[in-house]
Image 1 (cartoon, rainbow, N blue to C red):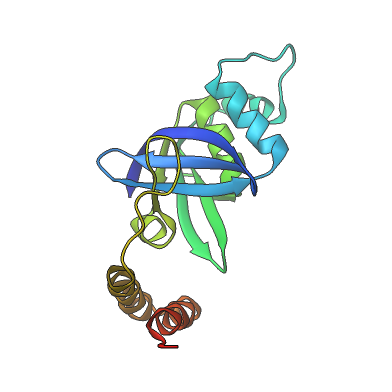
Image 2 (image 1 turned 180 degrees about the horizontal axis):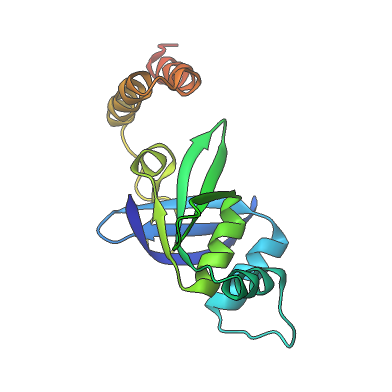
Amino acid sequence: MILIQSLRVSLSEMGFAVLLRGGGDPRTLPIFIGNLEAQSIAMVLDGVQPPRPMTHDLMVRLMEQAGRRLTRVEICALRENTFFAKLVLESDDGEIDARPSDALALALRAKASIYVAPEVMETAGLRLDDAGRPGKPESAQSRVEDLKRKLEKAVEDERYEDAARLRDQIQKLTQTN
């Protein structure tokens, strides 16, 4: 798992995205989220204390009152362009499935660690410059080589829908007009 060291909310023409970056990893994982979730995360990042608890504040307080502590959040999978997350509690209660946006909002409030599965970062991570724009474009050949590595991994992991999508991307890049 990749420990996230930097998290920020960004607005693009496609809507709000939370940008996750691990220490020592040049890639950033963008996850598009709704307006309300973006506001909830941004409030914590900006140190804004609402006069009354927001939903995520209430959830953390309920966990604490029940004697549970959120220790970590994991962005654990990407299937059919949808990210999946889980909450990991300190006790032996196991893991709780959650939307990534809710999991991140809770992690920030509970001061819990945030992790991303390496295969998620491999599949969806982007190299961004300091201004948050995509970095220098790769050559078509290096992009094909990268996609072939991802295809091999998808087949190895028996993620055949991902493999088919990657195969199609490779074919599109290697077609001669």
